[in-house]
Length: 114
Image (cartoon, rainbow, N blue to C red; front, side):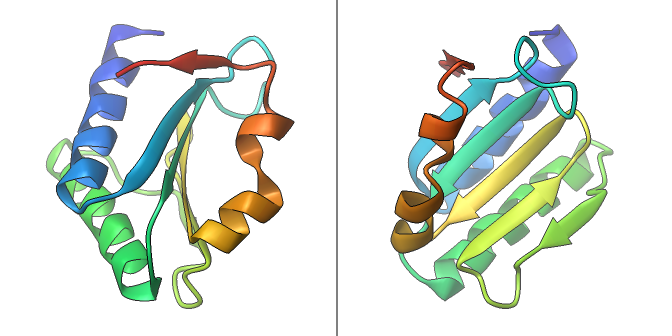
């Protein structure tokens, strides 16, 4: 992965860990998708925490000069998607993460340790 995106993903992971995000996973999609380079996937335990995780990521990335291109699912907070173009952050509750199982769907992607 390019050095600049690695530092941005590290910022995302740090923000998620700071808000007690669970089961954080990073997938490198460059070899399997033309849509985005990377997914960051995380779980939260309830609606309030999922929204706090989303807010924490936005705040951390805005300090780096990045703005979100789109947010989906914030109000219902079962699955919040934050689109930053080169990478997309998915924050799930347990049931939605089990249902959509992005790690299985994108199993051809390389898992990245940050």
